[in-house]
Image (cartoon, rainbow, N blue to C red; front, top):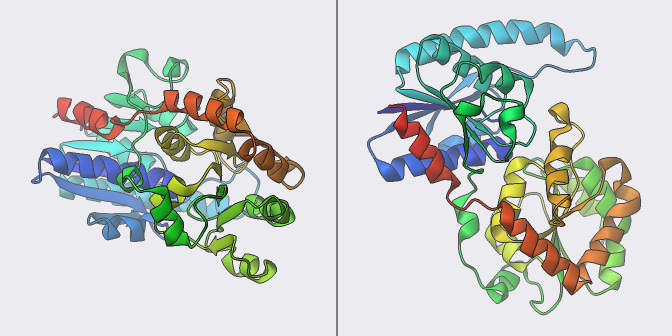
Length: 359
């Protein structure tokens, strides 16, 4: 059996894709899997590191504002369609899975035109334009939220949830996690993560108010992202209660230690927080299609499962909301009890079930 998994661009697309690939291999180690990503994006490093082959397309995103990049977009799209045709023809997959991201569109379009069974794994509560268009031609649409028949053909929808990184599910004792970060296991901990690349506004918000956390004897693990690490490191004096890292390699330890997490509201992040039953302050990114991160977060806020701070209000509100939450045991417990309702621990295997039904 041969499977193409296409998509990427951010960890939110890549980590679920790798989880699906791992679940396929667990079913049958002889399955041949090829990833197709976007040249220059992080999947070109992360996927080989996970042990899988990957081919890159010269595709890029379309800018909604008027910019020179949109002129090159159409040339890159045409080139990507040609390369996608060659990849699909040469690899000859039995099924193609699209996880979202720049490369997903060309590959799914080519495969569906060749009558190859296709699966969309839609991670968000509000899908992008590409998946809405492709939904008419694919065989299955695996979703993470209910009521998605507003966007997709009802008979194709399967509610599976989003796959998460399996290493996050490793059981790790809080004291062992504290030892790893050289922090006190008996003090409260806030873990700030702006995603795999970092988030400027989140970093600025934390920088503006982190001292208020320290004044309350609250410890901080701060994943800045590689683009912001040097500037943040220079701006924050050395302090035993603040651990600043470009990227946290041992995420399971950070989550085990954290009482409160500050995060973007990407679909994968929400799925991970739900599965780990964390109290979270979400700061949705404004730089995403259809403002889908805000819609993702609102779905949780309505159920008293999380706190939402608008990106535009981060400097004024973020640390205040974090302090209120981390110092209120009842409120933290309420968030933890409600967010777990969104957890889908077996999502990767349920998606694999749907893939195998098509072969």
